[in-house]
Image (cartoon, rainbow, N blue to C red; front, side, top):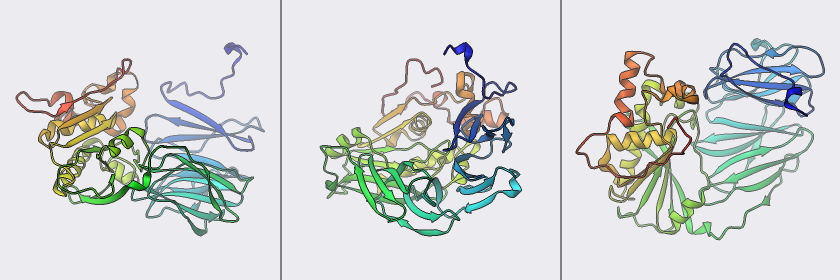
Length: 411
């Protein structure tokens, strides 16, 4: 039909710049609308599609994240970090939506609860334990039943299921294992390979280790290091260090074909899980934002120094890479410690920290960065590390390939 015939389902005329997405429950009884102002949280609205009721707003403000998995009867099953920096699973009865009536199904634990899926009368919980995935099975009351074994150190994503079925499909991947689909039966506890891509690469020839190094302030930071088996720690290995460190994004083991070529040619690949991300929950994120942003750069520099001191590599063989917020990271550390690196790849990096918020959606990043017009203190802090404003004459910088996109006016 013509666009003129489309109906407006939901809008917020008071805040036209806010972002929205919507989904329905599996039985199509309820419509859920998520409202976002930046990357830090969302509001949640619910509407019963079988009645003519208006939308009900469940939450206020953007301090927390809410994700409805589905509903069981009159109960919404919601994954949230409301008063739980490492997330929890709650049950919300649609007939008594007040927050005081919310019931914890799986309370907050030591590890970060990344995702959940509902199958039959069971709950499959995807935990992040030291930046790698762990699967656990619960009944619908939230009682722990057992662990679900995974092939190796890696990440679980795209977990799909239905309360009407007993089967769960999920994708598993690591630095040397391409995205592989498994089918798990919550009744028989059978976990079987469903689909694996054909790949001309022998993962058995390589190893992935996780180390923990000390940051400048003594905090322990996890880092994955991948290389061929039998690598000699002689300080001469070409090494590529990658990180992101922002917006509560967690970088768990992932698969990229270009990294395989690097590994096949004798390279070492390292991924540092620095602060600013979500690897240990919201507190880990907040430790790397706004007036704490220097922690992110210090954590990355400490990762570089670890790789050198442990004789994986040396400054003549060390390259660094990051994209977007990670591009800012590379730009900042290259300015602060140029002698540590031979090559730098800042990709679509946020380089002008004084003006980034003036261009299209750039304002939405202020939740992590702050803005130069917030206060004199914030201006001076941003000016102190802004890559564009801290390049100095007479300094020997690493060979740098700055990559951007021809329509990207923010970076």
